[in-house]
Length: 201
Image (cartoon, rainbow, N blue to C red):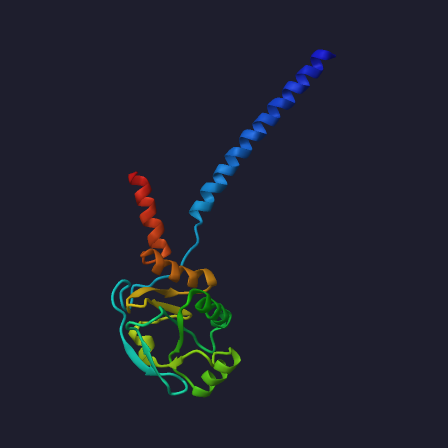
């Protein structure tokens, strides 16, 4: 009977040891998977002005008729978020952009490409954008070659285009600011270059 108990204890110990090894292997795989699923930034497009180059400088009136300058040197970096009253994702992103502009100390401008002025005025009131420049201009969208919405452009205080791309979430907007801080064109660019550095080390 004693030998039987010893065999059971040894068998259970072996099972526990196998489970511990399996748990560590699983934890390692989760870590690898987490690295591969790094946060995706804004989807940068190749069209339009190049990141790292001076941004186009454009003077356009906002919806109130006040002149707004896009690009050029200024006190704060300038975030331009292209939206539309008919864009459902834009509706979710506008409050996020407002909050981020305050926390990151950005000059926030909303841009749209045309349509009935009354619809834009209603949109400004509905989204509480009265304190932000809201520009309705085909020229502005064409300068940055905006194809889809919501689209954002971030210009630093020296007037250099630091990041741009399609944005569908707070993470996408934050990736534009991170690109400006890090000097990388995008999160994807950062991950590719860091992987190459790791392979060379």
